[in-house]
Figure 1 (cartoon, rainbow over the protein chains, first blue to last red):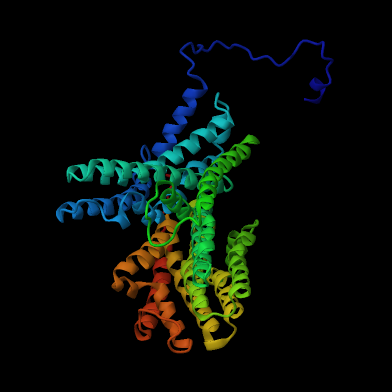
Figure 2 (tube, one colour):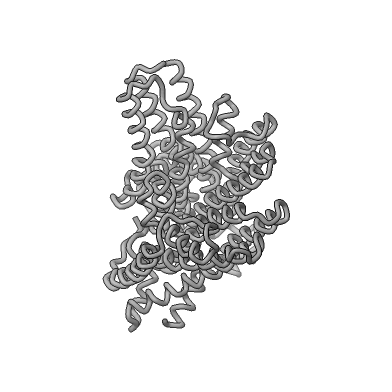
Length: 301
Length: 238
């Protein structure tokens, strides 16, 4: 090996790939975008266990059921008691903020499925030997995870909206709030998918990824709750809202309430109009930053 | 107890910076306690709030989850447990050793920091810090054994354990008060209530119910884990 390297550059190159007579591929080459799309579809299906074994369907499907069932019950109760609209505490965006722990568990369980196994079984070099670049890989995986969370959060919204039409409630009001719910769902999917994927891109072991994601989400939630309560009790109720910057779920819930002037749940709301802008910017920044971190993480593989 | 298994388990749990990452959790609790003590001074309701919701409600289950499932889960996951099972060592000894390591982790990373946070926030008055420290210790033991069992029987141990501690103990417990009878957190709180001065800590389970349940659940989960480990089938990656 060393003596070939010392050959003068004018000598004919010795490293030739010989054509040993296999038949060539002459079909269409579908290219990068096709590969990215395929990876996106595969990952999106994979995060619900579709196309995988029955055992890996159990968990995501159970979580999907857990987030949809209460919505069905709310629809049923509202129809049965002939209410003219859903109760405020559980209508579209508020419903998601009550059920946010399901979103957290889903992300913790499925984000490592999307990334960690590719790291552990060394399948990444296989991906990158195709036209796919590392940026395409990140794009497909981020898109798939965010879409999966959006399906998870959007489905109960859709159930409530369809239920409202079946019960012939006020169409305009429900359409408007269905829209708010979808905006909240989009925020949840961007924020949670970003956090989950960044953490699981660091570890090749699924178990540690799950534990780390859930630890980050739960602890930030609990710490924000404590700081909020302490500030609120001791008379800084205007400043207390700033404690929510470290809690992903309250961040989304309060920002959506502020954007659309909703009453929200209880007295938890953005500290001020400035706070609203900051919260909104933070959601978008965290999502963008986690995408950037992922691109950086996969650049050197 | 087998020292080699214990050493390997500790290394699996805490090796390669994982110990430092785990240390961040109690460090956060202590820093928060110092900040809050400096900001609002000595306050009973704040202390009960922090120790109850953050320490006993979040950190202890979380550490129990990480230590209990982490002691055996990754080994079963990547199949390297067969090298351990192939040794002439009774399976129950492996379980006991891993349980001891997991409990040790929850003591170091959850129970002691809970006690220290209590001392920082409220001093030694009304036995509050001690009560929550002992409560965290007991909850840590029970959680470790339950989650070790989950680690043996399912590949989604962390998620199943999480659904128990989030869904059952928090959400269902808030709506159906009967669910609290079967909550490790409430059992630990009932012990804490006994230790602290009357009327400081509240729990929805009485001590005569809690203690037998704690013992039965801890021993039962450990025994069942040993039985399941003795007929373990290794599944391939899904």
